[in-house]
Length: 285
Image (cartoon, rainbow, N blue to C red; front, side, top):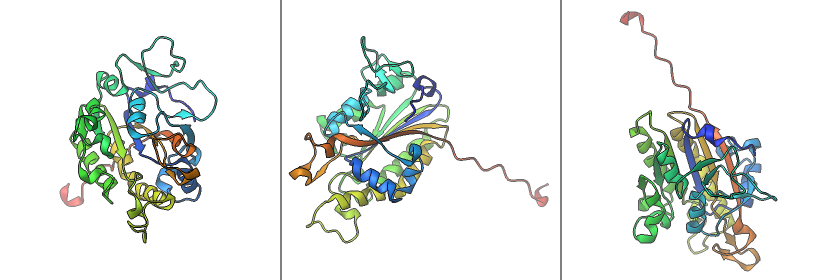
């Protein structure tokens, strides 16, 4: 996947970071190849997800690393230049195209560069209902979470996008935006996204796939909102996968390929052309 020069991106474009929390790489690839996630696939370079390794095995650890500049790493021998990096002597993954900041994390680095930083949380580590759930959203100038954004809501992603659209509408056009959205729909419980599935039967790889299809049906709205003001650089990835009985494992926060292997993509979103001003009618002339 071609690496952009982030020093050309930062300051010119808005930036969108989407973590599809808990999304498995194999499920993401399977659905893209089968044409089941057309709205995502049309933006993937070459129509394909890139195979990468997660920086952590569960949400909190992985997001701490991501916000420190350690996005999922390409699943091939490195070193691999990073898009973002804190100023750190001896870093072997800081390259000429890396955006380097003098703060502990990319969120505050972009804020110092003039960006308005916004978090729309999903899973419990973003719920701000206690000290632990306040750490990650506390990095942002503006953070949002509601129970309707969380894992138990069948309409969580739609509700998150409603909030994103509100945020974007009230932000001054001249202000650059760094928008982070943690999508909770893939995380368990997800059985309710598959017609005919039951709570008693629980979650499965099939319900996980159905949750990704649900996200795909609505993600065009998110992309449209993020790029409504100017060109937007988007990163879409999973923070970690999850096991559904693989080799006897279930869940995550464990060292299994289904957990550490994740899908990744970055790409530019261009604003939709604006309708030209209507021509005056004969009566109005």
